[in-house]
Image 1 (cartoon, rainbow, N blue to C red):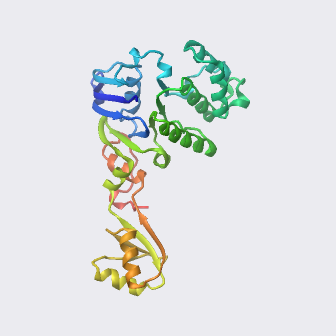
Image 2: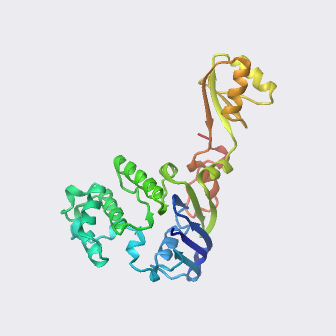
Image 3: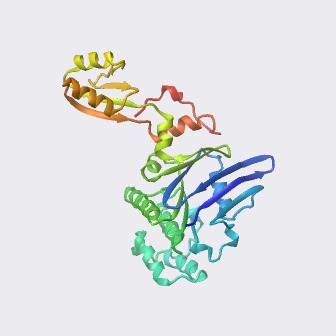
Length: 312
């Protein structure tokens, strides 16, 4: 199995340090979401892993080797950093054929990926006529051309329509199930939460988080339950006796901080109180991310403080 391993990675541009002694690993068999505000160092880190830039210090390896040392690198690592990089005067098929010919990949693989990416009908159209979403699909097809063990995509959902977003989501999950190493950089928190198993979060070039998605969300919020009942007075009295402080909303629902749906469900059942609704509420990835990176964002609009944001 092939992993991406970053150790004490540092990159300086003059007096500015874009990446500051980063150490983390991206492991096979799961989708790792690579998050951070603009200027956090995500793109720089990916460029360093791919050998497109030289580190000031530390190492970035794939399967224990630098990218430059890999034999047939397109068969080992597939990457999309900029969907606009493809030559506009080429057709989509010729663009992939050029990559295939230079890496000893069969033509049949080109046609298979064009169909899988939904570009079969426009395979012989020039790329300059493509929308952003179509260019994204082509870039992802190019990344997968060599059937690589490692896949690195920067903002793969950018410009995709709803069908395309569902496609890329399921594609990422499938690649991970196949045992590949998948690293996805994105600013779309809701979308990232739908496919990522693990998170690596940067802030001002430094590592802020390296942990499973569920563990990260649990670490950023306390349990909370929302419920409805036909016996509000009894419910309030029972919960108060048990040390809870229930709060009723204008719509008639109740919220209980510091409790889980299992806690409240068992209590209501013992007391014979019917429940019409019982839902665990957890902080969303977007809320947890914003709270974590509030002091790490270089450019930020005035907004409510983290304590003022309500959990969804």
